[in-house]
Image (cartoon, rainbow, N blue to C red; front, side, top):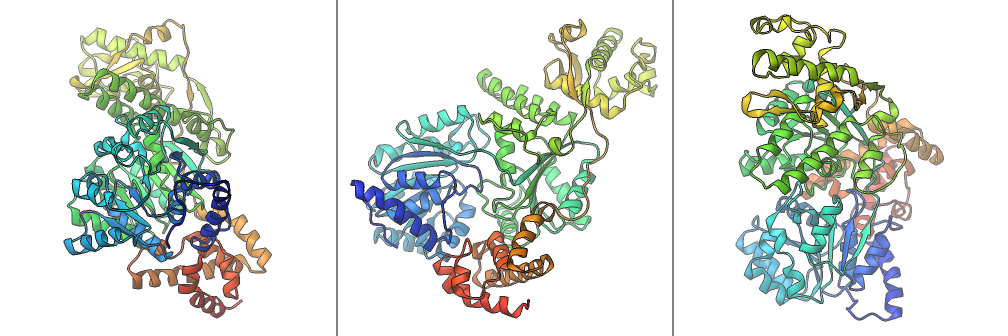
Length: 633
């Protein structure tokens, strides 16, 4: 599918881009219209302009360079940081009739040579390359001999040294502008605060690029954050009560916790696999391939897993440990619901998370400037976890976007009870002070809380802390409530933790204002229990009314729609297995659901459903019409 537009555009050329782009969107990708700023981005890049695109995961970033690649002469080179996913991306494009290939270390010499010959012969529309491969002299020379349509720099936030996904190779990608100044570049990311945006522009020499910033809102994702009580059991309740049999990702902070959690979930009947950098390459590849190609698997992973994951039907992302930044949280939770269907982001966090993250920053060998930035990012994450207001409002505000209460987060659905914790906080601060004054040294959280609650344990009696004036003054609060107060004090810098001395609690200078009555402490009242939700899964709970409405218009009952949807998924699974590709490469869930609701009886009717382009209509249309016909009314 050769392109035809060059770098010099007349007014008529520019006017035709829009028509031609829309035609490609419909004919190749099977969609009737663009979403959000896609149309403007495609026109700008196809006309030869540079662009920086900030668009949430699932917002359709890939179309912003794929359609210009098909409009312009030559090959579009896509720089992507994860070679493990290039095969699936290329398979998906080939299913659409697009001439795509990749160059990375997974190819043998003969396969790589075939791709290089296709590149030299002008037989490719898109070529995916890892930054490490791109920067080799051989690859640069190959590109010198090719006609280049554009460069797409995916996951552009990897250029940021302050970020959570830093890749040093990205710092060298300014060579694209230096070596091929006339070739347009489009840098894309789903995650970038103001600091990261400035770094992308500076490090990639995109000062002349037009910025397109979409809303960061992912309205189909429901955000829930709960206090850790029995985290594994809370996680199990969440999965089995809301997402049984659905695909999801569970993030843990350590490799050991990944292994432990995956094994435990498996023992509880949840199909779960571990993924972390400590596993050998073969195991990681096998687990990732199974997650992408099978239905209903749960991947338990460190943050080594996930960037660039194209699986659209991930119905939940759970965190058993708090991320170190809002960017990390947003990036990771954004892997849920890429298909636009309802999904959930769930996190359990507690005092240990706050202490651990503070310790990692304090003990880091980084310079003071980095530690200041890391502390600010952690403070923002803590603010999101502790807020009593709408989670989405707080999340979007971090990226500079104003919004109103969403009605689809835990704080909106079950408003927390605000709590003036000033007096309990003073008691806790006084107890820390009295213990250190009496003993000459400090103690950890468990001991301090035991003294507050009047628990005369052997250790408390040994140090005669049961004789302190603060012994028992906090008996009216539970251990969970006291840990919540302490978490807030640490989060706000009023108490610090001496990690060199066994997690000893130490009063910070800022605590004096609270002790003197010069400031107050407002927080959310802690909840007991895991916040379990039962009944139908989250997708049905939120998507049922819309689906039933569509089914009603088509004269089909909801049960019949679900039955046909399941048959279509079975057909997709078998077809994907035959072709050796993930099921979502054949069709997304949203497309299958549209088919189930509208029950097209002809190829023309099938062509009117989003996601059914010409190539897929030719390849699968007759099978689908037969399957629908055999399903009965």
